[in-house]
Amino acid sequence: MGEQGFWHENESYIDSVLNKVNMLAEDTYIYILHLKQNRAWFSETAKTYFGIRDTYSTDHFEIMRGLVHPDDWWEYEEGLPQRMRGENLDWELCVRMKGVSGEYHMFSIHTGIVTDEKNAEEYLLVLLHNENVLPRIDALTDLYSQARFTDDIEAEIGKKSPFAVLMIKLERFNNLNIIYGNDFTNQILKETALQFIYMMNENSAVYRLDGPKFGFILRGCGREKLLDFEQALREKLAKGIHINNTRVTLKICAGAILIEQYEGKADALKSKAAYALGHSETEHQGKLIIFNDEVRTSKNVDLELMKVIHQSVREGCEGFYVEYQPIVASETGRIAGAEALVRWRREPYGIVPPGMFIEWMETDPGMYELGNYVLRTALGETVGLLSVLPEFVLNVNVSARQLEREEFRAEVLRILKETEFPASHLCLELTERCRDMPIESIKREVEFFREYGIRMAMDDYGTGSASSGIVLHAPMDEIKLDMSFIRGIIEDTKKQAMVRSIVEFANNSGMSTCLEGVETEELQNYLRSYRATWFQGYYYSKPIEIKKFRELVQKISFY
Ligand code: C2E
Ligand code: CA
Ligand code: CA
Image 1 (spheres, rainbow, N blue to C red):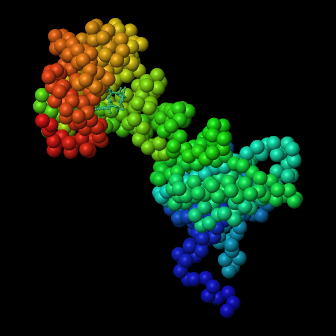
Image 2 (spheres, protein in one colour):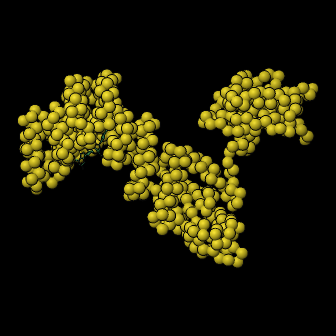
């Protein structure tokens, strides 16, 4: 047949051949210059990596100038024509180039010329090879490497179906190293790797991590499968592996994370699995620890969670949202308003209620941003309700970190203006946690906001000593009685006396009252005799997202 007919006539066919070739060449990117036309062709891989828009371009020069590090530009600009002329060939051309992520990597550049029938130069073929990528294969065990582990997790996240990441560590490996030496332990690693490879199927992959650690990705894997798999690993290693006629039995510690759906980065998942592995080693004698369980049970993980939450606040309150719990008129049960309650949601933690972070967060300067975020979001989301419920009042919790800042006053007014929310329909709730602020400055702030018609409530009244001080000195509009006084009140005469006297005190001092924690109809009916102004509690509704709250407002009023 000869050479004729080998290539398809269609140009787009050559395109796909080139693109395929480039896909096979890992960490290398192709572009081709048509010298006579002064036009460039970029492969799909190059386009994706460097964020280049078009396949064909007449301003490839400008494109390259944007990608090559400014300090290396002269090298590229001079080096490339030199290589084309066949000069300087024994010296590899290397420049830093920026990927779409914005990060610079070192690239070696290789070129080739294709000439036409008359031997005139027609195409310049340029291969850009990323020299900074870590090896994908572990040299000792021939398993996939740490770098590949990260990439594969990333790819798995993208598929949006369940999987598990498991990390294990061979126990007491350092001791073996000391006793038997490096060669022997390297043999162990190789042999262990081999055993693992036998255990893999199309839904699982094994990776060598640093030292005596191995990673696994288990696709379509839930809790049970994970437990089975981990058990099988243990059994295999407990049977022992043979090295130079010596049988070595191995024990492991193990940490894992189960993923249903996850939006974040692979690194975050890896560090969570690593966290669980660490716990397995230090606190659970090597038993498999699943990160998802730890978050709910261990105090220590809260620290980790705090770190992530803190980071979220810094990233513009990413992951935070607001829920609304109705506040009803005690006599009629009709919705009179709502309290805005912040939540944080992110995989793999799920929905985290403020009880888990607000006290801690309130010691952090970031609370200022978070508090203002809640205010802005809540006003923006509920302002529309005023047309349906003209009496609607929105309660928003305010922390000392907000109140103590000079700029807070202006910020509140700005948010009201931006959201077109009428000031007299906003109620700011202060809590005991303002106790560290001088009472005089609390008073000043309360007075300031009231001048604009904003209502001020004392939250969790009666749970600490600060709240009575605040109520006595600052002109508050409302007292919210803490749930602890309401729970069990039907059988508790002391609570009854207390609530009665607080409501009376409020009435006599021109303040309204709200009783929190109304969980049942029975409790509601009983509490009516106290003549408090408002009720709030699960009987009416748990805190719900704005969409549901709107539906609730449309549908129901309570009697
Ligand atoms: P809080 O201001 O006393 O809010 C009422 C809490 O009681 C809410 O918990 C609510 O879900 C819960 N609750 C309401 N009705 C019932 C009931 O009938 N039974 C029971 N058992 N619980 C009920 P949540 O949302 O977990 O909030 C906890 C605390 O976190 C709040 O207590 C408040 O002090 C603080 N918080 C919430 N959002 C914010 C915010 O945006 N800023 C500030 N500074 N604090 C907030
Ligand atoms: Ca509150
Ligand atoms: Ca409260």
